[in-house]
Length: 604
Image (cartoon, rainbow, N blue to C red; front, top):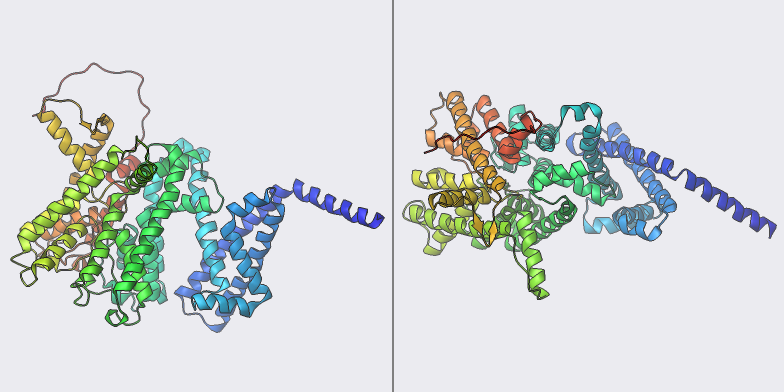
């Protein structure tokens, strides 16, 4: 009895000691996770991107084995130190599942390897651990950097704005992508730095323009890198960092939510966390359904050599939903094996349209549908969602009608009436920032190219994966013009009044877009004056880049290095947003507590 009492007392003493030092132990574990996350990134890059000799390969494997033991140890210690075990399991379920897999692997290595390889031959406990560390801890580190910067005295004195962080995020993503595409195992041939930077920026900004043949220039590793850049860029790097930080148990500060609000267009800070989960849900659901549909519609015989049906389906589903326009086919979807496959093209159209609607509109639609299902009397769509759905439908229909009328007797002449309408619908949808092409765009008439430029300039909807000035901006600008012409000084829509600030932002975004297009076009006219490009071809290329569309009339591969830099800057500006860039670069001034007398300025 005495010995039992001593043992119980010793356990209580150990428990008390652990309780006192819980925070210190957790801090040490978190620091270790950050270090191992960086090691995981280095090991993954070394294994995937370089041709390693036996000695380096053994070192890489040793690092991965050390990660397994450390990951298992930290998961066990965290579970032991958790005050509320049930809450800990609920919040860390993903980490605990991986911990269970690793534990089985360490105790019964053959059993775990056989179970994982049956799902995917490349799936191992080491890979699983590396991916988890990268997708959680690494993103947590990235998510905490803006917070640390903003709360430092030096940066606070400089008044760093969320817009600057958004712009810097996409610049950093493009540079990281460029470095990854330059890895030896990422491409089949040596590529120039400017081309790697161009394609990485195009993928990060979900544009789709390319100076090289993406299908043949890059290896399977390179295609995976492009897929990752498209996914991260399509949803917005700030969205993903905060989303993964939330999943990993982190908490974002108020100012981080302010930056997130600018990216998502969400006025209420309290709704930002909910929007994050909805972003993840809608993205996974749409891309998974799209990939499944594509997988069921294609057959391996039609695919390029070395490309599996699974990867082909996932790549094109992600590329379509993110409005990127990248394809694993050298001729894009104009490839003879796919351009006549109408069910396949319709799946691409559906993904593009859904991705271009924007998450606030989709969220409002789902809330309205659930309220209707519960028979709530006050169920209604938001004004924003109504504008998005009406404007998107009208533009899609008018674009289809216009392309069919202009090209029905020209480039579509050899097609049946049903195929003509289908191709017109496809091009109308792709012109709204997607960038896939099922026909040779360079063969279109000048009138069709002009119509395409207009559709590209308007683009998709706010907080979507697409670009352009946005459907709501164009709608508010038109409604304001109508209000002025009819002698009214306000816009009322669906029994709601539109704030004056929204109208001002709409006109500012449209004007800034036109000014930048004019400036970039003038720069290309200077840099490419010896190439003999037509004026409308360069205009088409600039609008395609600024609106992150990706359609081209064949100019991009032949641009000079200076011209490529102009297009790179255009893609970045277009992806982040004109107002966001101006706010990021402009010096903030405190608002004065006085006002001058008004005096009218004539505007005619």
